[in-house]
Amino acid sequence: MQSLLSLRDPVHGFVRADPLEAALINSAPVQRLRCVHQLGLTYLVFPGAEHSRFSHVLGAMELAGRVYDTLAAKSGGLLPTDPRALERRLVRAAALLHDIGHAPFSHSAEDLFEDNIDHEEMTRRLLALPEIEAAFARFGEGLDAQQVSDLLAGEGDEVGRLLAQVISGELDVDKMDYLLRDSLFCGVRYGSFDLERLLDTVVPLQNPSGDWGVGVEGGGVHALEALVLARYYMFTQVYFNGTGKVLELHLSQWLRERGERWPSDPVAFMKQDDISVLTAMRACDSLHAKAVVARGYYPVAYETREHLSPEESRRFDELLPEIRHRFGAGNLLISHSAKDPHRLASSRVLVRHLDGTLEPMEEASHFIRHLTRIDQYRVYSDREIRDEVEAAIRELV
Image (tube, rainbow, N blue to C red; front, side, top):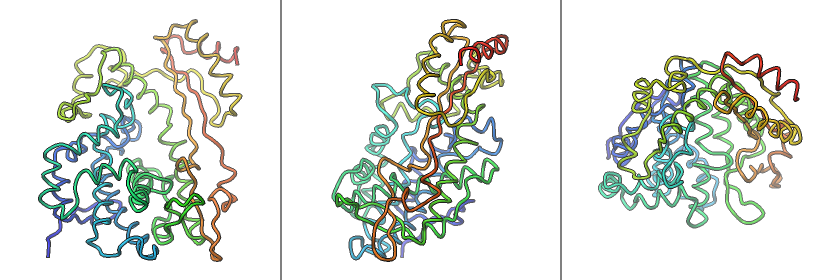
């Protein structure tokens, strides 16, 4: 009997890790996530949002095992139900490792990797590090890092593609965990939904093209609606918070004015985290650095409604070059927050009714079909010209 590592999690209770998972948790790429805030600079807005990517990946791993168990029990033999099945261990390891390539402050400045790679490519490179490969070689029992990399890339047979949907798909453990975790640590209630009911009603379903995905039984529609509503409110109230967005813009501007890029080499990348970036910002006299470390950020001069039509969004975007020209691009920061929170991924979540028929979530739910895209612009400016900028935009609008 293999001993398990037990970790107490504020969202899911005890999270237990087998020897492979324990070795991966203790590896440098995963431990680095302790120094990467889950919500970037949002902790400067919501004081409790000090949680890290580290706790999130532990929660995602726990949920991956639970989702797998439900899917396997309903899969008709497609997925083995053995708790030590390679497929189950694979999806848990992938959930644990799926975020190791995140740059400092998570999504705040993830377009600044060298060689135009993204955090998903960096994850693949980190998975090839000797420390990670050694952990799999010693404890993998037939599982290796390349299998995890392939799953995260959505590659493989029909089982592999189904497991990939558990990690990053229409109804995945990433969303389930971050909504509950972010809501808890931000001190808001918007991210709450009935996790237990949702986990009880997930089911593997084939779409009309024959691909397997994670769907939901008819009895779980309202639990899924609650998740969608939680996601909608978390975006409007937390992820797209006006102060949080301007802090992200100041961080990005500071990195760009210094010509900073996140290393594409995985060993060099491992030295970059929130602490290293904040240390550099505190030693810098840049306006944008001080905006973050001394809270000297630009105030909002103008913001649109949360839900612009495509035509309204296009017209406002066309005004921006004139505003930048009139006031100087360096005196303005502009955010465009856009999201379809009711569309969980590129394809649809299917609902299986009692008679066996399948229906897209948007059609099965009267509530979800009426949700519309979040599309909002904010213009921030130097405090001395804020009123002038606001008046100019109102005149143009």
